[in-house]
Image 1 (cartoon, helix red, strand yellow):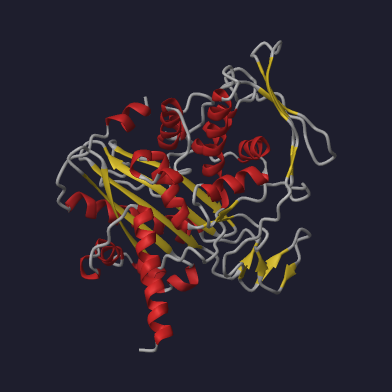
Image 2 (image 1 turned 135 degrees about the horizontal axis):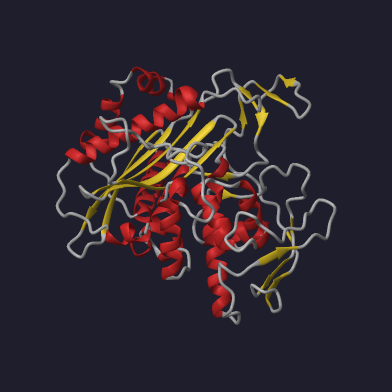
Length: 428
């Protein structure tokens, strides 16, 4: 073998080793790969088999992580992938709300330690308007007190994936802070560069915010207007997708849809970030978020609740069913989700792409695993036409995938039953 080929092979193997070390995982030999067995079971379903057979066209990526427990109860992760490529672009949609929620909690926690002890996620705020494209925001009829708070924004982001709440977090953080901090934490395949439903907004400008006491008499903290100074360029491959797209006037443009200016968030970064919030002590310090114990419990609670269980605000289960933002939710033989099943997750849905990254547990049996997957449901290759196969292909596939993984986990041998009490208690 030529020297340059040996050198390339060396760096490839070294890179794989570093990735596995950073992910805290150990991979089994291919013949013992449990994801292969899960997908074989999944192929028994005609729809799932069709999706897997056309995985290139559907841009399917799957990460499945087994969790075993050491003697001290700490988790041991083993991760397996199907068509996973951290450099290949797919639109993350609402998945980007997860890092903004975590960064906002971290920023408040650090501000409290640096001279603002009265500030908390429950401190009311008011967003000011300085420019024509900005809007003032000082009241929230859905909040318990009628006043906006970061805690309420984060609660709505996880329970029903609320878009305005995400935009408020974007203003609190600012574009440069978001992306610089994520890179410092090692999430190098993540970029968050725009709000939702704000096409004419200059994304560089973050509105000023004032945090004040509930009665409004005392200003606790002011967040000045922030203006992004850096150009954040999407490094992912394949950002021109499909064969056409519909413009704002409803006209079909017969050329690939350019998504290079949109947010990006690789599936590997998503899975690693979920681990960091659920198992902070088990991931490298660099990847963690600097949160209090109360912050962690808060995130766990609203990641795991069904909309009908949320009391601030309350949600009509007819409009917000249990699977509203839990695409992996599946039914047992009675047609209902197992009562002991819980899904701590975040989802994304837009431009034909469905994504769910979740920690799935069964409190009765001790089953626990992480499942991350994305699928493009755009059979005609036209973007922005609202003609996507979410309900007929994407969501059924993700639910069947989760059920196949759950069945495998129910039958595999475990050395130790995990103590899941902290997650159960967080939901109360």
